[in-house]
Amino acid sequence: MDTKDCIQSRRSIRRYTGQPISKATIEQIVALAAYAPSWKNTQIARYTVITNRSLIEKIANECVLGFAHNAGILQGCTALAVESFNVKRSGYERDGSFSTSKGTHWESFDAGIAAQTFCLAAHEFGIGTCILGVFDDQKVAEVISLPSTQSVACLIPMGYPAENPTAPARKSVGELVRCLG
Ligand SMILES: Cc1cc2nc3c(=O)[nH]c(=O)nc-3n(C[C@H](O)[C@H](O)[C@H](O)COP(=O)(O)O)c2cc1C
Image (tube, rainbow, N blue to C red; front, side):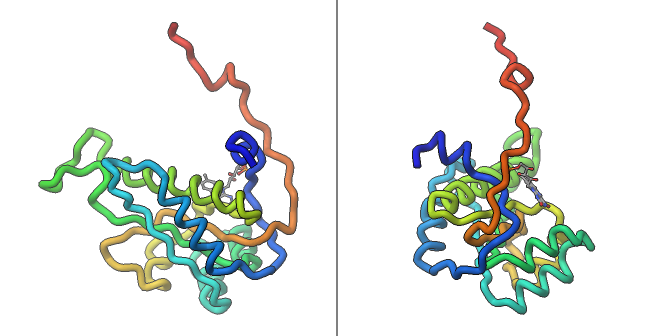
């Protein structure tokens, strides 16, 4: 798969076959995701990968702010990657002050790039993912015993795809770009 195919054919996958994902495959995905760019190469993204059914069920049942749609995705996933990031590094000066007027923005920016890189890498290995943003970050942090120096960025349920959705419509290039010449 070349880069263009990988970007275009990746879909958010919400139904999974249940076929186990090997530890070696997960490690290869994380190794590729490590090549995501980051603020001053701070590499703040971290991944807690969960295959334990009762832990995934707990997150599905107690940590999605009552959003049944996301609970269903999590209940059916084969593995759950909780992406987190080390706080107060990206976008900060050494003295702890913000580097720019955008404040904490760069932490989420780095986490987002890392999440997409992770999902593209997973796609290369035939594994479907879906970035989830509707969840209770404090509860997830508690359930997975996340170190207090980290914050949860997103949930990424994973699994071999049991669906092949068509791409939701995209805006035209004309709507997306302004060429100033
Ligand atoms: C930051 C972010 C949060 C998202 N949150 C959810 C979510 O909570 N539940 C869900 O089913 N999909 C979620 N998605 C997936 C989007 O709905 C999906 O990317 C979009 O519809 C485009 O489809 P595609 O990924 O197949 O191209 C999220 C995606 C992003 C980037």
